Structures are given as C-alpha cells and as structure tokens.
Length: 330
Image (cartoon, rainbow, N blue to C red; front, side):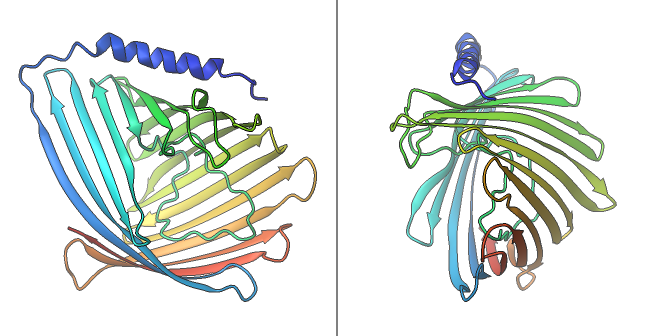
C-alpha cells in the first residue's frame, strides 16, 4: 500500500533542484546556434454518439492550435522551449504545452506544463467511447499537463545504450475539491528501451493529494508495453494496473492497436475489482481511416467509429459513436 507521507516525492524534487542549480551556470555563450519555428492547425469534429437508450447526441467541436518552438545550442549544452495555445470552438482559450528544457545529450531537465512518456499509446484514437462509466486506467495519473496552479519537473537520462529513463513529478496540482498546494502530489519513474523496429516501456506512478477538506487521494499504478513493426504496420501492446486506496478498488486494463498507413484499429479491455459491490468490465473497439482532402497538402478528413459493451454497470451497458474530423495544417 502507498505510504501516507510525501518523503519519496520530496526527495525526488530536491534531487532535481540540486542538479538544476549545480549546472545552470555552465552553458557557454560562444558558438550558439538558435532556431525558431511557428506552426498552426485547425481540427473540427462532428460527432454522433449513443451511450444509452434514447440518448443519441449530435455535437460539433474543435480547436485551433498554435505552436511556438525555439532552441539554442552551444558546443555541449542546449536550451529549448515550447508554447502551445488552444483556441477552442466553445470560446475557451488556454495553454496546452508551456515548458523549458535544458541540459546536454546525456541528461536534461524539463520545467513547465507538458506530457511525460506515454505508457499506454492507443494508436489512431480519433474517437474512443467507453460504455457504462466503468473505470479504464492508462497509467497516466501523473503524466502531466496539470491544472492552473500545478507544477511539473522531469529529469531525463539518456545513456549511450538503447535505454532511457524519465523521472516526472507533479506538485500543487489543483483539484475540484481543492488541494494543499505545498504538497507533492505525484512521482512517475519510467524506463524505456528502443531497438531496431522494437521499443518497450515500463513505469510506476503514485499520487498522493491532500485535499483542503482534510481528506486524501491515494493511488498507485504500474503500466508498460511494447511496440513493434509488423511489415509496414506499427503494433502497440499495453497493460496497466491501478490500486486506489481510498475507495478500495483495483483496475486492470489491457490494450492492443495497429496503425497501417492511413488506417488504425484498436481494442481496450478493462476490469475493476471492488472490495464491495459489483465488479464492472468494459470492452471497447475503435477504428479510423484518414484521406487527403481534395489531394491538397496538409488537409485531411478522417472517418472514425467506436463501439463498447460493459457488464455490471446498470442499464447503460453499451455505447456507439462515429466522428467526422477535418484537419488543416497551415
């Protein structure tokens, strides 16, 4: 079970801060090579989703995404940054990514708002509809993109071999119930391997959030998988396990998907083991196919479908949906 203190997470943060302070003044100003790029794209979705008797909904949503990237290098060190602005169709405007990263080939530190390594890649997941509200765990509690008042720091180690290591941390992540902003809320170490046509990943995460009400959220999980080439296709096989100490349940989720050119197909199965009450299960399939729009570069249309069935969830034990997505990069 997860310990009721933040000693492990605090030690990880202190180690990262020590490394950052110890190397901040080492970058030389000579022979700098700056680069800068700006790009944007628009994505528009038109959906039809039926997740219960007589509950078919027809909706349209989308966003404009603008990305700014910059990097500067000396002979040994680099500093890079990225900012992503989202202009949503519902008039919401927010920042998706906003981070700075610095270091060298063997190590670097990343501060800001970003996503850590994906332990459960879903391939061409244009639309995924899960039935019945059954839990699905994808080893992403501490992956990142925290709320307004949250912070993230990640350490990356890259040796001369095919192995890599990431230690991602979250702190002060805001929550609907409010949190103690001084508490470390998550730590997520991940080990990766990359070979010729094959890669693997394995990670552990724990989340400990102190709520202003005096309650706590205690969760820990493990996730991992492999990706490999199968002819001209890419196959991802994933597995993840979650232990929720507060509500006394465990979630085990498996995923498999394939991407072949413009086509993608995937399957997700999740089982919940409750100490008391029913044990929900959900199985979801999804597929998508992308075509160029009028043979115009950087413009596409994607047709996506998803279907899901669930057990021990009540009446709403099935869900189906379709999505038409237009994308244009400019």
